[in-house]
Image (tube, rainbow, N blue to C red; front, side):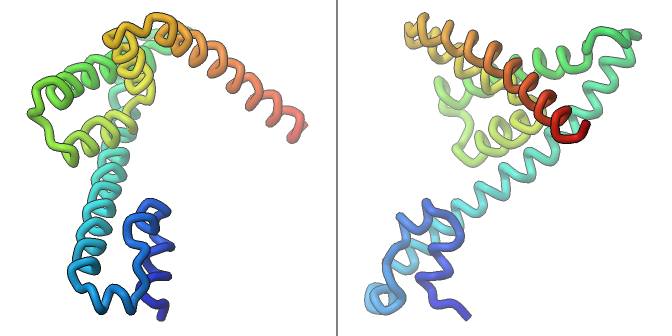
Length: 170
């Protein structure tokens, strides 16, 4: 079995920075070992909440997008994706206000709802929230750069992905 230091350093780089004491030092300083275990447990719990939320958000994306697309009766325009992205942006704005400005949502709840569920539901909501934060901070040029960068580079990356796959499997 690996020693305590090696086990900690393989979990996450962040934990390696936080819990870098070797096992003999941890034995001598029991409080440090308990603190590292607490931090390790808290980070792992947060990662579990994000992963669980992402699982739920992905399933919700599939269901909501399919339902909205079916309601639209359109086979040409992706109304389902548009509905998911708009709903996700509205929800991330609502939850971010509660978390950032009102302090109603804890860090773990924020990780579960915003990073996990809404991250799995739509990444467009993160883009919308970050752009609004730049605008709220008076960073108009950065907000415009964010919009243009995501749109142009995102579409360019999709084209590059299609082109690469085409060239590799033609």
